Each structure stands twice: as C-alpha cells, then as structure tokens.
Amino acid sequence: MQILVVDHPLVAHKLTTLRDERTDSPTFRRLTEELVTLLAYEATRDVRTGPITVRTPVATAEGIKLTAPKPLVVPILRAGLGMLDGMSRLLPTAEVGFLGMIRNEETLAASTYAERLPEDLSGRQCYVLDPMLATGGTLAAAIRFLVDRGADHITAICLLAAPEGVERIEAELADLHVPVNLVIAGMDSHLNEKGYIVPGLGDAGDRLYGVAQ
Image 1 (cartoon, rainbow, N blue to C red):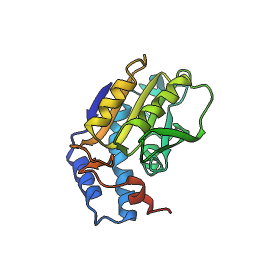
Image 2 (cartoon, rainbow, N blue to C red):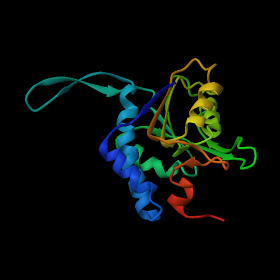
Image 3 (cartoon, rainbow, N blue to C red):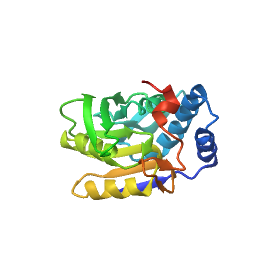
C-alpha cells in the first residue's frame, strides 16, 4: 500500500482549524470540503486517461480525457458524506456509490448495514472517502468489499490516520492483488483506549452534523 501524507501549508492550515474544538459545524463542513479538494488533487494523479484531439480557436491541440468506465467515488456513511462535495468539485464526472458501515464500539469490528453500488465493478477505479482512519477495520472492510465486486484500483482519502489503523489495513489487505493507495492530510500519534485518534479532531460525524441521538 502506498501512503501519501500531503505536505502543503494550506492543507496544514485547514487541518489545524478542523482540530480546534471551537470550530462550529458549518465552518467544519466548509473546511472539510476545501481540504478534500486539495487531497483529491493528489489522489487523482493516477486517474486513467486517454489521448484526445481538440480544436482551439487557432489550431488543433493534443490533450487527454478521462476514460471509461468512469471513476467511482464511494463515501462511507455517515461522515464520508461530508467529503463528497469536495471530491465532486474536482472530479464532477465521476459516479457516486454509497457504503454504510458501522463500528461496534466494544469489539471495534466493522459491519455493513447499507450499500448502493453496482454489482460489477470490473475495471473500475474507486475513491473511498472516510475522514478518520482510526482502528482501520471499517476502511479495510470497505476496500475488500469493493475489490470483491471487481474494482481493480483503490484510493482511500482520509483527513487523519493513526499508525495502528495503517498497520491493520496493510495486514488485512496483504493478500489483495490490486493497487491500494492512501492519501491523508495528517498522520497522528496513536489511538486512545476508546479507539479515537490522538490528538485527532474528535468524532468527525458529530463535528460535521452534530450529535444524532
């Protein structure tokens, strides 16, 4: 698995504001969108393209276009939804699927409770959106779910990751024979006893949308 921690002052600035507990939900959502667009710029360097010739007002020019099948963006519900607009801004022609996964707070194991995805993902590049790579169970399960349906190239975009989560993903997906990339804004220190990233930014879903009881 290739890991890219995006080193850019604007990324660091926006991430710092996201961490601040004083940042309210509307500001948090806007900054998440902006930050994901910056991360998506790096994450799409390997997006598949083909040659095309166009005519300018002056002459013909050689260029490239995205090839079929279209890339598939997959936010993991619910917090991943807060990243979708930022990704779609950079890659508006991509198709969008949804994957609902929930983590058992006692066992920290992930399970699927909803999905809206094509049955056959053969030849598809998939971009998985999940703000926090903490224990790694949810993201590992999501990636395997997509690969089992035929996806042959996976890029996960996260705001933050913990070393324990990265290690778990590398271990659980070691048998996969497809490229898996991870693009993140920051690698934090560790997980606490509750499986939260430290220093982190708290619960991303609650910060985005408030606490839903």
